[in-house]
Image 1 (cartoon, rainbow, N blue to C red):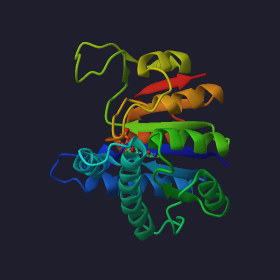
Image 2: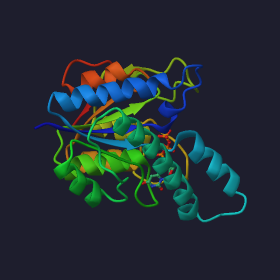
Image 3: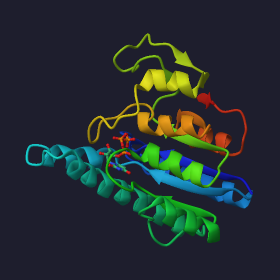
Image 4: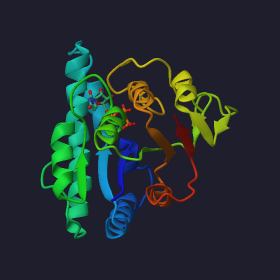
Length: 233
Ligand code: UTP
């Protein structure tokens, strides 16, 4: 049975569009279809707006990075709870709790088709959690669902003429995102450099795509051609 891990960037959950619940509805559909075609699915949800808001509020008072990270982790678990409850209401068997560690998630997935979690411990983002989980589960790949169409040579918000890539090697992606260090709580690269480092060490393929369109996530889960960047060992 195929096992796929998806990192869902926290920004996906709170799009700045009127019908913002639509994405969640469509994601539940993607999960249902994947499960009925026999895929085991682990979703790792990012912190997005509540992580940023909480970290910004606390930053003038809390200077220790790991304490700010803990605020971010709480936000990822809030978002994971929203996704988990929506999936459960949709009639899919999903783990009751939000696992707090990779081991717990692996355990839950041995009995159930779907597990939803957020962050684990300070020092990285949910991308790195998803990548670690994929390695642990010996998954074929880890999908990084974010809010850009492809990996670019530079941040396209800062340089609109940055080059975009359909294919990259993990080494090339590491070049783009920088060395595998934890920069700052709540700071965001297209893929967490720490996660990329671990994907390199374990020769794990990453599919980076725009998760605002759940059909792209679905295509990648099903092993079909998808729009995005395929990052191979
Ligand atoms: P995210 O995974 O959402 O990171 O975690 P991000 O890249 O900043 O934001 P997205 O992908 O756009 O949603 C939010 C913050 O929570 C802490 C980090 O401070 C991170 O920046 N965190 C998260 C951890 O310390 N450990 C974890 O396992 C997860």
